[in-house]
Amino acid sequence: MKKIIKLVLINSIVFVGIVFILFFLVEVYLKFFGKNFQIESVKPGYIHGIHRHKDRIIDADGYLDINGFRTVEKTKTDSLIIDAYQWHFNKDKKCSLVIMGDSYAYGDGRLANETWPHELQKKVDCKIFTFAKNGWTSLEMFEFHEMYLKDLNYDYLIINIANNDPHLRGSYKKYVYDKNFHKKKNFIDLIPSASLKHYYWRITRKFESAHLLDSILNNLLRKLPNKGSVKNPPIVSWGHFNFVNRIWEDDIQDIWRSSLKDFYENNFNKKILYFFSINLLLEDKYYSDLAKLFDKENINYLYCRDERIKFGQRKREDWANLADAHPGSKQIELYVNCLSPYFKKNLK
Image (tube, rainbow, N blue to C red; front, side, top):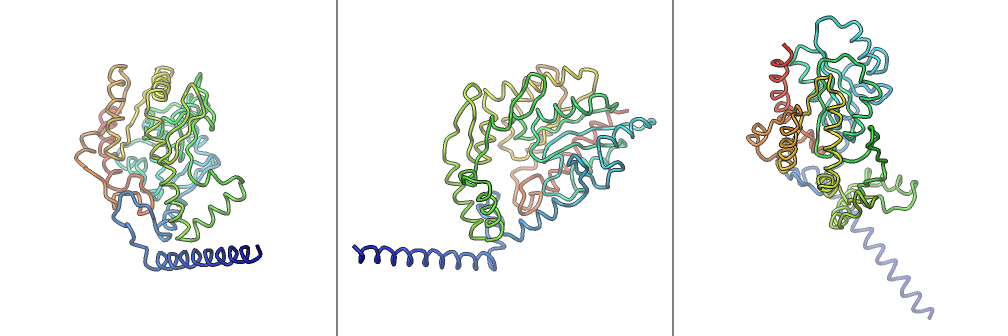
């Protein structure tokens, strides 16, 4: 019996040693030679730490007010909301645009002065106030407008619609959904405690081999089917791709589209534009179908479909940066060149 235990122990040590050596070799290779690994892939399974580090520096650019809204210049009152009201109290004849959106309008992956709202500011003779947060849903935007912006005397409200905005989270009127209604999960969510998750997150950020392994594990989990429904929550989706596909299914879309219509009608005295910021060409089927509904309901929207189709399939160089797949310079130029003529025409 002792010999068996000793043999098992030796084999275990050898196995651990081999695994450690393999991880060490992979770490060394990726650290020193992996910078350009999958550099031209639009669906990379691995992104080198140098690119991820640069992405974090870019995202930290600009200023954040007390509510987390990003600006190029520091707000006068440390609150973009208060700044907006003060500006409108002293407003002369200059027009104003208010933009609400998620990471696309926030400019995730871009410097603060390279976002599409900032570029639009250069094209139109209007003051622009951008209220955007990473991960914000349409319901959360509507809730924010109801609480803080409804009495603001702006000339136009642009509501940025990105492919993950139908996520049912937020409290606007009859639409009340908490953060647990629809969960997007990754491998880290299988770790039982918050402290262990924190350590795992730090390890995957520090070690290239751990980051690669995390990507592999997440790709395996993305093969799991979605669970739950609107009538039988919670809804669980593994990975971003499954999550986005799920929120464009009928049961969620019926609710989300109803909220878009209600917000538009509840603010009938305001000029509102729903702006579709298409990123990938495969999203066209979603936006084209939504456009048909808006045409039927006489809801004001702008979809630069022809321009996006002409642009074609994106390359890695078209990303916001090499570690962030948000829209880059060419797509931002596309957005601005589509929006600016609209407002030059409608704000005369």
